[in-house]
Amino acid sequence: MEVILSHPGLQDLRRFLLMTADAQGLYTQYGFTVWEYPDRCMSRRMGAPYSELKNTPA
Image 1 (cartoon, rainbow, N blue to C red):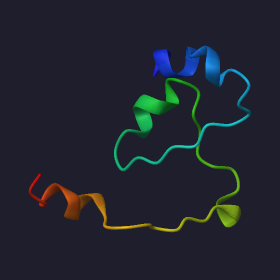
Image 2 (cartoon, rainbow, N blue to C red):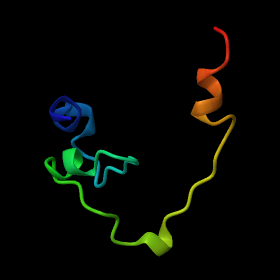
Image 3 (cartoon, rainbow, N blue to C red):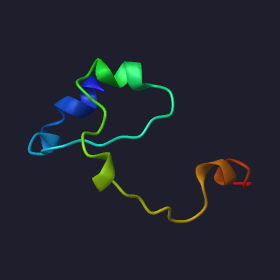
Image 4 (tube, one colour):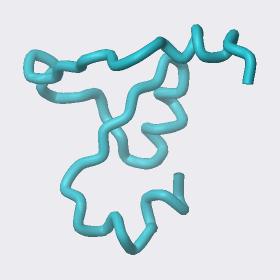
């Protein structure tokens, strides 16, 4: 995370968003907090879920 957050090309960003199922404790150490506007956050799934891609032969 330190490398990503310190990357020169990302210094003008106003917000980072991420999703995690089990690493909230890790990301809070880097200043991430729970999204303050959950009623404004939406997503759209595109393509197959990653769980299906893992079972696809290369």
